[in-house]
Length: 438
Ligand SMILES: Nc1nc2c(ncn2[C@@H]2O[C@H](COP(=O)(O)OP(=O)(O)OP(=O)(O)O)[C@@H](O)[C@H]2O)c(=O)[nH]1
Ligand SMILES: [Mg+2]
Image 1: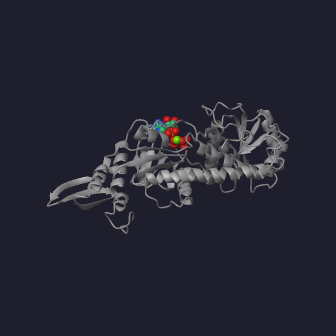
Image 2: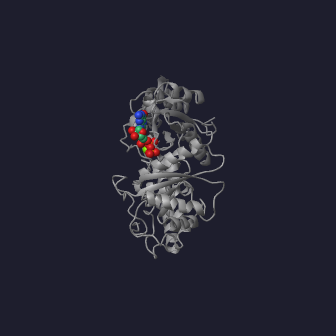
Image 3: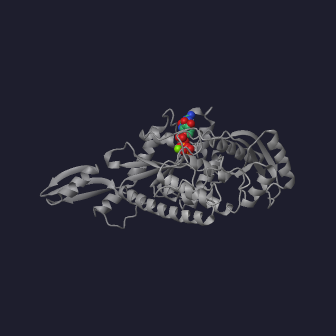
């Protein structure tokens, strides 16, 4: 179906930073009781990267101490005037809150401060909208945007210029008619249908690959997943020092022997406070991870907050029902570690971790060997006895490349083969009851 230009601003251009109106953004974070100062700063650094990824110029950063959220304005009336003053001083035209804002809070803040206000979720959605390239990603992002927008519709932000566009405005809805909730709901239904169709197609594609061992890259955004994909498979995937450079998934074969056919899939990265609407909408993309046989959990070894990032990724994976999943921990960017300490710390926490550099190639052989053993562990070694009529089966076994030994025994051909368990089952060489995984 054709995309409704009225509902969604054209979402992507070749350069993600190109569409910025060069908005001057003032960042606002909240320090809650019990938060460590370091954690609050980390969140703010991340928010700064997000804002810059969305094309804004960050002109200031404020941390507000709160005991609890003010229902009307989050920060409280006094702070609103203070923020208005600061925003005036630095000529900010956009305030970005690290905290999620209720629709009414955003409205009240905009009235009180006199410039546009968005929250972290709005910012992430905006970045996703800029990045979406394929039909699937665009559909998923638009759906997430509309689900986010729906409760915010009633008269929201109409007092501000809406036509100008800008960060967080690349959303659906620019005039009264377009912001009609009924239209949005209808569009949501259409998109949901479209996604169901896309999911069915994808599921079929994955089934066709079901006899191939599947690895999926997972991890925090910007850790080097796409770079690893390229280093391991020469895939030519877009890699960039920007958050969420990748939204679509790409699958490529790994250079293993014919009997150990395996593929690697690169997909979207995770971040703290990932909007639930996005996780829900990206179900079909995330299925690439959940249907994999083994996850390569990629970590940026030089990021001081990697333990938090790992915990966040584990949390999201657990939310997808993947706790305790077969995985290999891959600590990337070892080339820029100042000394041996980051690598040691990684190994202390994860003794089986692979320390690698997608940039220099360091450690990739070890990683590939580890991946190969995961593939081999998934195979079965069996003896097959073939008669004169089993020509097709013989060629299938050779196609899989797993024939270890062959000898003629009277009129029977006796083979020793090592093949994926799924293949063995399909060819009815083993009973269905052998468990594939511990
Ligand atoms: N020094 C160094 N930099 C790396 C390495 N691997 C990746 N990078 C850099 O890290 C940045 C992010 O790399 P990507 O491969 O785009 O990361 P990603 O995990 O795919 O990121 P998203 O798709 O945004 O989630 C880029 O600037 C890469 O050049 C590495 O081994 N060493
Ligand atoms: Mg990527």
